[in-house]
Length: 438
Ligand code: HEC
Ligand code: HEC
Image (cartoon, rainbow, N blue to C red; front, side):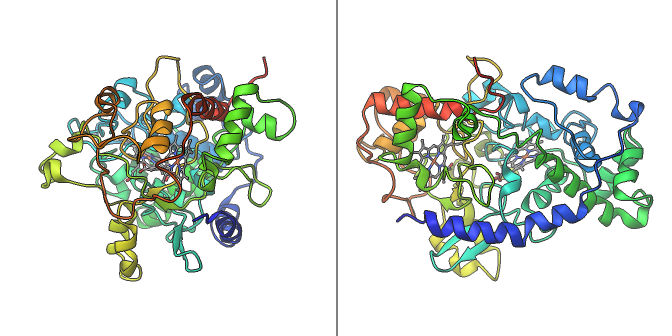
């Protein structure tokens, strides 16, 4: 059942062995200040902080600054209308910034109108801490990688977030450029070309070096995502853990339940690893039995999804099936999705802003997902697929999207009261970065 301890141990060694050393090797010394014209009106530190005032100023290395320019650059998309931040906005906890989308289908439109992916954008913050995907035989578990299904393994650039960052530019449902040369070309003729040459080398814009240059793009984005501007560890939770602040009564009760009868911390672990603060994930995968989100626009995209409304998201298992070395493990992993970090899970630009939870954004509030953990196996099964709102009214839960491998040992019938559910929600509200003591 509990795989916590072994995961902590193996995560630590994997982190040391893999991702982090590569990032370090590529990191550039932090002295050169960015010339005025290159920092551009778009994202000087001042503009950035004005737009995202909760962010504390962070000193970024040239590589991290380059990564930030790329992350927020709309020109790096087919129609010049979409940057990474279109789906990973700081003010929404580095996830989708459009309340209306979150309230319904949860999947964001790409640069080309009418083109949608099939999952909810997870937080792009704290993803850099995930180790390169590996199999842990002692517990029969996969650990690490990026994306809900772990398919950005980190095997290419030694870092899942860097592998991941090369994806969206070329994904037809996202930024939709045709090839690496288009991405690099736009950077080399754009506003921060000099910065790119400085970080990636004088030859980075030569035609012959496109592959190298594109790797440098991925690594720069990952470096930004790993920087203290993104991975801030500046929540109330962090202040409490550091002994600088105290939880209020309900938060404290929620934390106790989170780590106790709620069993949440079996997967969203609250211990730090190797001196780093807690990440609220163990980077493993699980099938919680989350229902289908009937409003997912992907069901209607028949040209890319011939199965239409019958399509089901098989998660990690489907990725493993396509990998000769891992295909034997596919069956045991159908329906499993990445345990997401809960950092910034409640971060929103204004109080009425809807956030959505789970790989398909099924749940429309933290209260509802906690209620699901608590009562999945207690309430009756709904007669058909339903939205979260409909299921709430009917007081039932729809059948799981994937019936295989559903975790029944650690959730489903927690025996929590309504007040206890609320306390867990209050605890999760302490996980938002940018906390200032009142
Ligand atoms: C159109 C929306 C969209 C755009 C644009 C986009 N993403 Fe994503 N991002 C997603 C979705 C959806 C997922 C999850 C996909 C999946 O799991 O199959 C994701 C996953 C991620 C993850 C994985 C997080 C984790 O914990 O596994 C990271 C990191 C990330 N994106 C960073 C980026 C970067 C960097 C860019 C720009 C180069 C970008 N995204 C552009 C929608 C988007
Ligand atoms: C067995 C491991 C496990 C346990 C125990 C667990 N979680 Fe999760 N959690 C996951 C996985 C896996 C997902 C993603 C599932 C999916 O989307 O299909 C998730 C998703 C979430 C999300 C959505 C986050 C997002 O960004 O979409 C929240 C919130 C959450 N869990 C809170 C909790 C709370 C609160 C508890 C305790 C009551 C808990 N979890 C217990 C594994 C676990």
